Length: 358
Image (cartoon, rainbow, N blue to C red):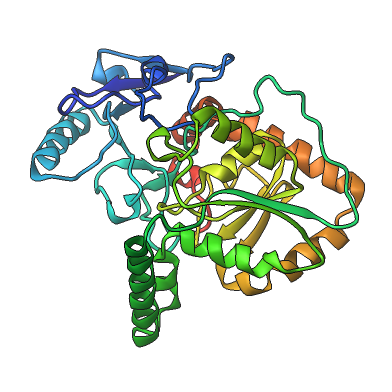
């Protein structure tokens, strides 16, 4: 058990799911889909202590959303109390642009960042996504003559204005990358750019069977759906299960919920790597269960997939699917992640939870 001293809250935001998993179960009508708590959820093995001197770490009870002067004053007060007791503070950042937020003087868990901007005190965590494979017997697909690649989700534009903003932002980033001689700047393009680029590179490739269901609205939130949540959910899960490989570029943040959901269903995600760091990279052999493709190689994505298909035996293909489910279930599901991450942090320090530096 890792002993946590929970600091006083800042405002009235909900506490971390880590500290109170049940409070997040009952969502609002416009809540994010695919967020049900697994029936066999293993509450993270933490002990909340009231004496700070008896703790392993001090933790802020809420996600950091905006670093205001008021929040900074609050954090400084907590940090002083922790330092007086010889303890480190854990801060969790929960927002799509978490790569823009850095907190000094703490151990920081965040959902996403870019490898070249992650600070030495920051750890990429495994996000909470629903275990879509729970209650389903894993039925690996057999290897066919050619790979079937799917994508079901947001990859269009609801209006001319949305498309215009998309075009302008991409142009600005392209010009900045050229002028500053820094090609890394292109990774800040919205996820829809990388989705559309990957889809275009595969759509007319006769070597690959594609199953693309493209939407002009975001499909992970009931408030932005053009269909019933039930229908959307069924279509999304079926799309993954009936595919050999699933395109998983980033969303607005530099991570993909689809990536983790695909693993949960025992299928192989194609991760379009926009300078990503994945959770627990030193613990997990991701190459055994995913196909990772640098975003710069998107124009030749078809060749990469075909090369992968040709070198992967039928037995290895089945093994990869089984490994995908195992890795998700034992390492990446929210409860499994924290039950590994916190003891590792206590025993070996921050570096044990980080991938290689850029």
